[in-house]
Image (cartoon, rainbow, N blue to C red; front, top):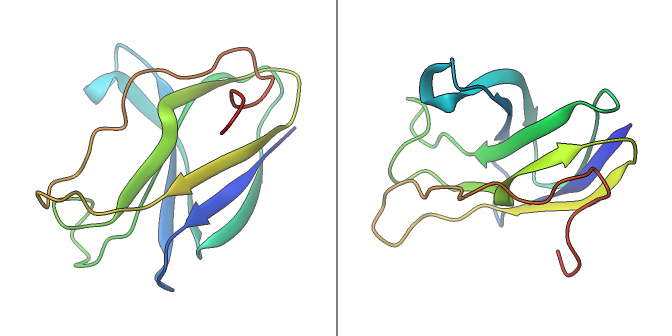
Length: 121
């Protein structure tokens, strides 16, 4: 099945798109399951059907020391989604730098069921 969306950023820098699976036994409560390096604009990635919960985050490492304060960052609104039996469109992620220069939190779990993002997303 396919997850499709867009990485929204006004520059041309390469964006790290990180994929995690929630896991209470892992550091930070999630386990890395994939990483893509993409340019701003549309993206599509294949994910196993019925994968379940998936957290998607994106960042631009401006100073090559890992994500941190001052680096543009974004995530799927709500923080996570549940991959079921249907393709999911509309996974648009806007990258921004927080006004205080710190990395923003991506929030609480989002839509479930793998039917796609909630209306209006």
